Image (cartoon, rainbow, N blue to C red; front, side):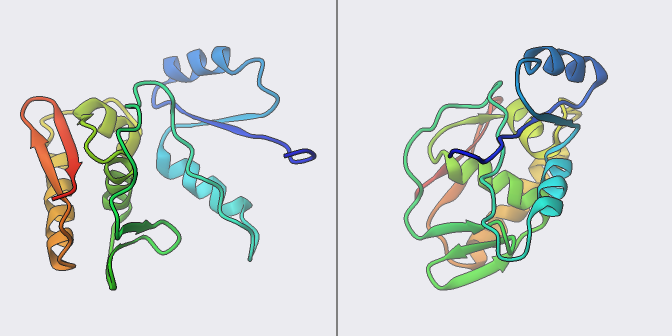
Length: 166
């Protein structure tokens, strides 16, 4: 779009990753490096004027799985209101639940590794025991059930999770 300045937002949790990202983005006209997806959303919220169109969520190209297929029909994640919608039913999502579901619903059928999800949702590479991720997945599964949604989150043992259409 002519006349509209572009902005690249990079997410890097550690100082070393931020330095590396700065080198990679050095030729970019304008860029911002933050340490989490949450910080990036807060920044975009500050830029958004009332009535302005919401920018598409920024996604880090590194370690992101390729799209596996189109969206699951009738399943929607409303990022403005942070709700999950299935047909005519809605349920609210926490920021972590929202980010996890955006990843999985954006590429249904695609397996997201634990590392990819942790980076996209928590904004860092710390995996720990994984109980934080399993807790969020359990809550999202419960909310999918609460609205009667057919899609479910399947665990791929030792690898990660994927959204299955039924």
